[in-house]
Each structure stands twice: as structure tokens, then as C-alpha cells.
Image (cartoon, rainbow over all chains, first blue to last red; front, side):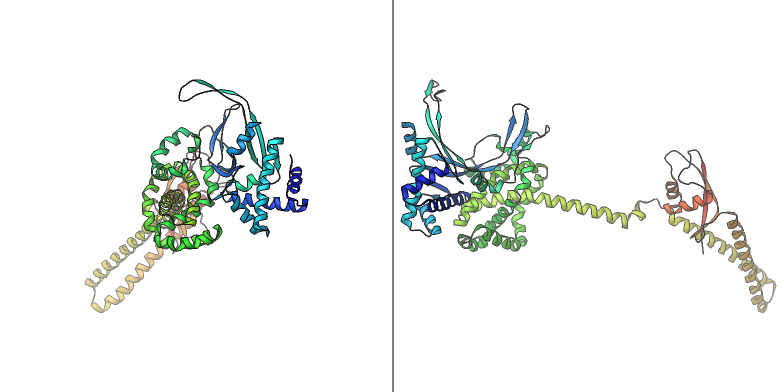
Length: 92
Length: 434
């Protein structure tokens, strides 16, 4: 399901027109991104938790060339699925 | 930071920003995630622009070993929800570290060494950080090259500020309420102002850091390990401090700040050292070099010449006085004046003859027109060796390079730049022009 289909479906469920849906979705996504940027945790019950994790830098070895590389530290978004959704996914 | 937002909080923020009712926003957020989960289960993949991709991944059965019993067990296949953030979100979140790039380590970089020396140095810091620092994984993460440090520069500044802040209790107390309401940039500006004030006072607080900083000269790269480790904790700690002046946080901050201090200080210190040494070298060159270190035959020449003169003068005078005495004893007192006049004349003629001799001498040697010294004879002969040059000879014999021109003129070199080894050059005897 791509973005367009998703927007259509969301609009249908909420009885919004496509323009409104797009604007609100963008705003919501923007809001979530902003919160994540500030390293806040976003916990959506029944869905999962978005969290920013700090990864320290590490040394990796390219197995082919045996070349050692230093991977810089980074912040990455992690998503932990809620047990409810996890169970639902496993039922099928 | 590290505040937990649930649907309600998110909806409230969302409503406020988009001028829609709280209820509407709440419904929208719920439906948004509900739609995602529904379609995720149905279609296994949901893409949302600007946010990311949710995927349902099938994990097949696999065998494993029960860690407690050591028996082989079968982990059944299941579905897993994966979320891959969109590039825009990934970059936005990774903004503090966006300048980093993966670096190829050179052959010589010895990581195990770093770790070994690393431990004792950063031990005190780690102990304070460990509670916050442990959450991150991987055992190789201690390896810390300098490269990373350079790009971290922006953060340590604020960190130091935080640290000093906490050192100065009064300031931190006054600051904390401020920080509550303001955004990070403003806080940093505030802190910078405080930093300026504190700079003077912070000397005491630096004393603690002073001792480790000396050792850190050798161990600099390793302490930087500690820094990046504490880096993360600090960002966390900073946020907490903005919320409340937690004393625990501030103490850990101050420790971290000291460690940050240590890394920042040696750079300035070493730069300052180099500059100081350079200045010292230059100063000593210009002030003391010629008098103290240079084997200076420059001044002696003048001395010698003037000594010759005075000797000559003395000789003349003694001659005079002798004649005067002789005359005195022989003639009457009134005559003595006349005689004295005569003797003066004699002395003058003697001096004249001397200068005449000299000028005759001078004429037979080539001279430098307008030169400060006259060539009056040959002082010695120098046989050129390989590696010799005229400047060197001039310096060692006369005390200064500039005397080379007298040697050149005296020897009538056509091409003074090329003198074959074994060639003997004459060194002129010089006399200062009066």
C-alpha cells in the first residue's frame, strides 16, 4: 500500500476530502518527526512505540577486503511494535 | 527530551498546531494508526511519505539452544513488524551527527591498545555515566579515533557550559527556571553569557580538571572515548536539567564537563605552548643570540684597532714627555713652552708619517669605495676545503657575513661563487675608517 492509497483510505474513513487528508497527514507526520527529533518517545497504544536511539560509533571489518572502517555514531528511529499488534500479526 | 508522548498528548499538540478541535485531532490520530495497522496486516506493507515504511516480515522457523537448560529448541516462525524510517525522517533525527562519514582505518591504528590504556583514565567518568550509558549496545564502541572528535565540536561547547553551570550553584539555580520556558538555542545563548562571567571564577573549578589534563596530554585520544560515551548521556542529562535542576544530574554533568574540559584544554594549552616557545626562540635570536652564542670576533677587531691606536698614541706621548723632560733639564723654564711646541710639532710629524705610511699601505691594496673598513694588510691565508664558503670564513674570522666583500675584493675574485677546493684565499687585515 503506497502513500496515495493510504490517503484515500484514511479520507474515506474520516469523510475528509483528499486535500484535507493530505494536509492533515503531512501535519501529523511533521509533528511526529519534530517530536522524534527532540528525542521524545511516541507511544501509540495498540500500535507501537517510536523512539530515537543513539548508536555509538563502531569499527566494522569488510570481510572481503579485511578493511577496517569506523562507522560514525548516529541517531536512528526505532519502532517497537505493541504486543496487541504483534499478536494480531501472528494470528494470520 | 525523553518525554513520553501518548496518543492524547500527540493529538493535543496536533490540534493546537492545526486549529482543529481536540476531538477531531484525537480521532484523526487514532484513525491514522488504525488504518496503518489494518492495512499492514492485510497488505503486509504500508508506505507513508515523509514518515517511513511499515512492513510485515515473515520469520521462518529456526533452531536454537535454551540458554538455561542447554537443550535444542525450535523457535517457530512468526511475523515481525519492521519500520524503516523515510530518508527525510532519518536525516532529521540524525541531524546532530549528519556531518560524520564512515572512515577507513589505517593499518597502524591499534584499537586494543586504546582500550587498555583507556580504562583507567576514564574510569571515574564511566562510573558516573554508566547508568545512562549502558543502554547502548556493542562492545567495540569504545574505539574512538580523533576524527570523530572534530565534528563533535559543536556539542562539547554547550556541554562545558552546562558543566560550569552546575558548578556554579547560584547560577544554575537562577538559570534553571529560565531554561524551563526557553528553547535550546536561547538556553545556549544564556549559557554562553554565563560562561563568560564564569570564566574567571571557573579557575577554581578547573583545578580539578587540571590534574587529569596533564596526564591527558599523553592519553588524549583515549579520553575522547569517554567523551563520546558521555556525549549521549550528556544530551540526555542536558534535557533533564532543562526540566528541573536535578542535583544528581548536575553532579554527573559537572563530571562530564570536566572530562570535556580535559579534551578541550590540551588543544589550547599545546597551541599556547607552541606559540610561547616560538616567541621565545625568536626573542632569544634577536636579543641574545649575537652576544651570547655567536663567536663574535666582530667587536674584538674594533677593539684591537683602537688598542693599536692608543698604543701608538701612548708611544708618541711618552716620546714627547721624554723629550720634554730632557729639554726641561737642559734649558730654562720659559724655553720649555717653546720646546713643548716643538715637541708637539715633532709628534705631529710623526703622526703624519704614520698616516702617510698607512695611506701608502692602503693604496697598495684594493679597497671598497665608501667601505667602513680599509684593507691594510694580510692577516692570514685560508685554504678552501670542500663545503667551505666565503660567508662561513668571513663569519668565523671577522664575526659577520658582511665582511665577505672585503675578502672578495682583496682576492680579486672574478666569480666568488665558484672557488675550487684547495685554493688558498688571503684574509685581509682591516682597519676602521676614521
